[in-house]
Image 1 (cartoon, helix red, strand yellow):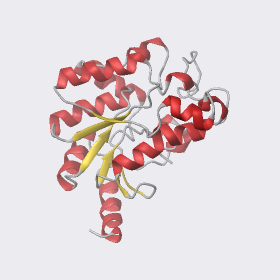
Image 2: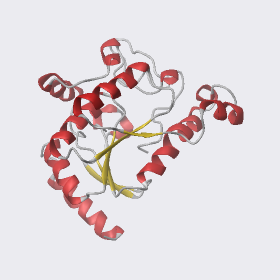
Image 3: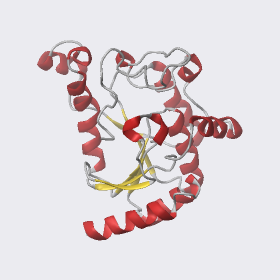
Length: 230
């Protein structure tokens, strides 16, 4: 399938699945693109997608970007999910250890140049893993941030050169939590401690009532995205 054919397929699917359930889209995605993977950060949206994917296509790969600086609660969520579903998630590591990064770029790069830190520990590893697939599934929702407001449920990801599925794009946070509670889904304990959006431990803080849910990410600067979805 050439690029023109993929874009035509994507545009048609985005329209057809806009008002259908995430499960229906995931089923179509894995059947249409057998070489597909789910990116999991162990946040609320992603644990929902893990559960849906296990019901639809348990053999499909699930990977996570291990930046080496996740919260312990995030690693605990990974372990509990793996045990529950009897599914091993693919660990994707940066090329540089934290010590090597400090030696080359200086200590605490996440404070001095957060974009560079995200490139090293997230974007470059993601680029490498996605080369093995024709499509990927993400937990993007439109109301998470202005940068995601126009996300389609099916897109052609120009940055990484493959088809991208956002099954929860039209969901609200309430929809996500309704699914979690109704289905007894394992989730990150930090969500109960005022962490609606969870990234690396150095760059994520709890938010106060009334704050934007992503205000705890890269607090203190104008950075709003790590670069995975731009």
